[in-house]
Length: 353
Ligand SMILES: Nc1ncnc2c1ncn2[C@@H]1O[C@H](COP(=O)(O)OP(=O)(O)O)[C@@H](O)[C@H]1O
Ligand SMILES: [Mg+2]
Image 1 (spheres, rainbow, N blue to C red):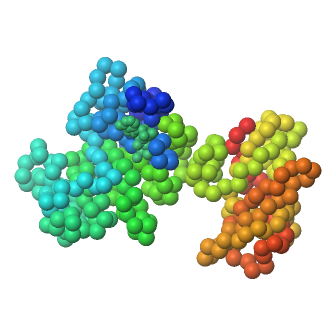
Image 2 (image 1 turned 45 degrees about the horizontal axis):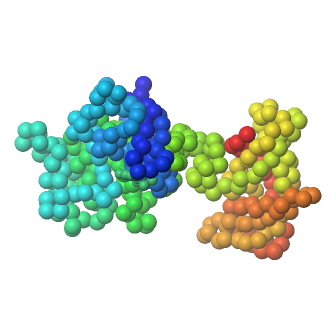
Image 3 (image 1 turned 60 degrees about the vertical axis):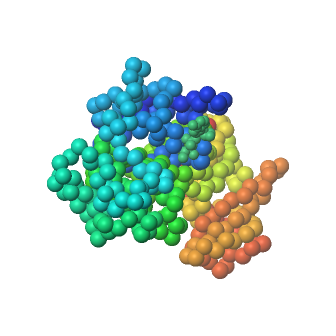
C-alpha cells in the first residue's frame, strides 16, 4: 500500500517553454526512503516544493497519508500537510540554541511534552551535549543534524530533504550519508531526498526515482538501476559504462558489435533488431585467453584498481570503439600494447531497442 502518491504532477512556469516538472507519478510506502536523482535543472526542487506546498502544481494529484493535499478541487496549505522540510542551506535560526531550534515546530505541545520531545530528538541525532550551543559553533554536519531533528520533531508524515549533502565537505559526505540513513531509519521516517549525486542516492535510498528534463526516466532500487538501466541516460548517470551499438543475430543469442559477437540472454530480443548495449567497466575481465582484443591508450591509476582505456579496431569500415575496463592493478598491462579481455553474458545489458 502506498503511503504517499504523486500522480501526473506537472509544473509549467509561465516564463519557460517546457514544463519544469512534466507529468511525473510515483508512490512511496510508509517508512520508505526515496531519492529523486537527476542533473541540475531537471525539476527536482520544483517537485519537492509542490509536495511541500510552496509551489502550486499546474496539474496533478498529491496524496499524503489519507489526505489528498493537492487535487482538482483543493490545495491544502503547507502547514496542514504534515510535512517536514530540510532546506539546502539548513536555514537554522542563528540566534537560537540547538534545543530552541528543535523546539520551534512544537508550538502546540505542552511545555513538558516539548522538553521530552527535544531530548528525544537530541538523542536521535547524537547532539545531547550541544543542546545549548548556537548553530555558528557547530560543524556543517552537526548543523545538518539539527535541521533534521527540527524537521522530525513534530512527527511529520513525511520529511523532505533538498540536496542535504551539498554543503558538506567531500571528506565528510560518506559519514553524513551514513548518519542520515541511520537517523531516518531509527525514526521510522518516510522521506524524500533530492540529490544530483548518484552516490548520495545509492547510499541512502530504498528506491530511486531518476529524472531528466522534468520527466521520470526510471524508478528502481539502487541495485536494479545500476544493473538494468532502461536507457542511455540512466546507464551513464548512475555510473561509468560502455555503450555499444549492435544488431541482434537471427537466433537472438548474440549481438554483432564492433567488438565482435557479444553474448546476450537468448530469446529475449527481436532477431535482427538494432540495440544499444551497456557493459560496466568492472564487469569486463582482462584475460590473456579472452575472445576480444584492443590497444591500450591510457591507464588511470586509482589506488587498488586501474582504469584501462582502450580502443577496439572494428572490422571492415567500422570506426574505432573506445572501451573502459576497471581492473585490479596489473603491471603487465602497458600503454601502446595490445590487450585481450572477456565479457560474460551477465555483464551485457541491452538498454534500448
Ligand atoms: N520560480 C521559478 N520560475 C521560473 N522557472 C523556474 C522557477 N523555479 C525553477 N525554475 C526552472 O525550472 C527548472 C527546474 O528547476 P529546479 O526544480 O530548481 O531543478 P533542480 O532542483 O533539479 O536543479 C529549471 O529550468 C529552472 O530554471
Ligand atoms: Mg534543486
